Length: 539
Image (cartoon, rainbow, N blue to C red; front, side, top):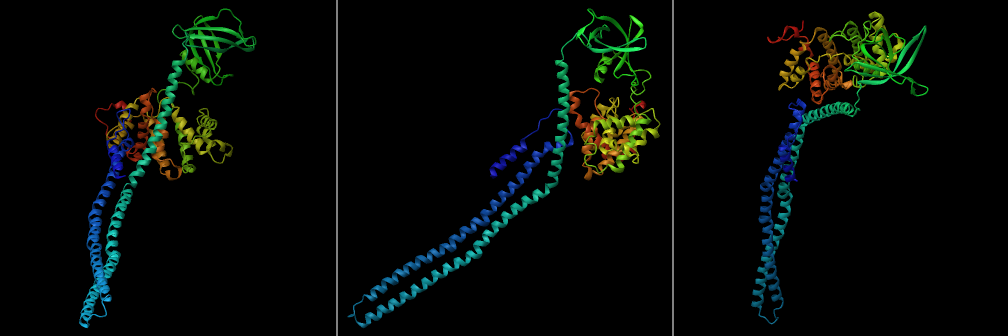
């Protein structure tokens, strides 16, 4: 057993993990070193076993051998003497008893005296033999047991050392178990993202090639006097030549009503307002008929998005909710007020709910909450009044998990992540620094390169996450768990690649650093390096 364990210890010591990527997280480095730590534990136990066995030879085997030679050997010698005296006495006694009655009296007296002397020698040897046996039996009670006691004591010391080693390693093993669990969760998240990327790639490769950028059925609005009808057309579009063709389709017969499609050259494409009488509508103007606006209806939200993207369409100028904004325009007062209200309500009654931010709310409720909380047509008072507990009519959308999911979704749906695409690579590089102090300092510098409104929102969110983490004994949302949840939400790459997916774990590390060092980072402006551009600094 000892030899097998030493072989295992050697194998663990020589084993090296191989991984993709040049940088590992602190947890991964600890896990990679864990096998060497296991090797040390096994070696220390086996060394003590060797010491115990070495002491056993000196303290147990040699004393037992000495006991056998001196005491048990002495009894054997006494037995030989006893046997010899017994035989001699018995022979003399037989000769004495066999003497003739005609023997003279002096001869009988001499024989009797000789027999008496032999009897005394026999009795002395027999008593010596009995006493030596008794002495050995008595010595066994203390000398032999004392020797075995020393062995048992050493044996218990050996196992006690094992217990002490286990106690000393208890914190390390518990911490290692936590790190293994964290690494498993990072793996699950990375595997899911990698699978999604693989599916997207395969879909793009398996998609049949077509001469058209986009094709499919659309409904065309046609007005005849005051009557509006919608006719179904099969439409195609070639982006390179901007050629748009349409062929009317009869839904009842299942056939086209034209032999040749009408072909036009695209001039512009504009998405309709959401207030329009039908959903998924967009206007198209062709160069051949610039005075006419064609209004088409797509089949779904995804379908209209595909048509708009294919034709480089734009949103309606009056559609403020869907207009493309600059990097920071979505972080307006409406968004800040909504996030603050969500945080206030969660911190009042949701901090101790298990799985806060990890367990998602019902999507329809989350969508409804976002629509009501971000309705820019209303004043802030009217827009956020439903958050009041008195209005129980909205209790179905005011569950903690619904509010938490809405907060996450608002941040996730920003046109650009809160910590910006521009600084993503710099943040990841900061998370890969060698020492923890270097990482904290780098992140501290980078946070203040964010635009002011993004820095303010990040401050608001991280302060709240720190508050959540302080209740982790109840809500089970440790700093690590919050990093897993908010890492991809607050920080992500502009392009989804395998390399970016493998770096997701460092997104989580950045969020952990921000939460654990909130006071230091957000309450102290760092001294910026002289090379930093003024435009990047917090103003």
